Image (tube, rainbow, N blue to C red):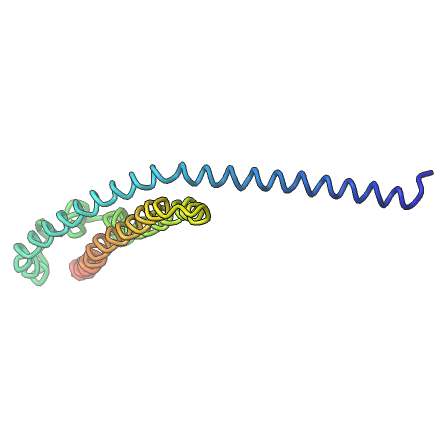
Length: 198
């Protein structure tokens, strides 16, 4: 039979060993997560650049659609008031209805949401990617601060702040067209309801 103090000693030793192993595993896990986070930096920056290109493209499409709508607005309103269902440039929901007159309201709403989906996703994802690209260099910046390396701090912070700024610029560039198009599509859906009431 093992004396009681020996059992306590064995319990203490096993608990201490368990905690040491756990600390080593946690330290290894922390290192692994830090290294994986640094690997994310390049893909995130590439995504930000691609989204910036898309945002400029989306602004161009929006400007083109605005000009087409402006050009055919009077004829569109005249046709709606006369209950005439004709194709009009710059009115994608209305034109979908012209091609598919049997489409139900839910189908038209889904089509409208589909037209807005990419803009809405980019508007939400760009700031998140900017935040990720901001947080990843903070670890090396804090390490450089602890080491007294001012050059390392400034290099990390330049990347961090530039990426969050560009993420917000992308979100701004895509939010405005998404909001205006949502209003345009809602008015087209209302006008389609008017056409169906006859």
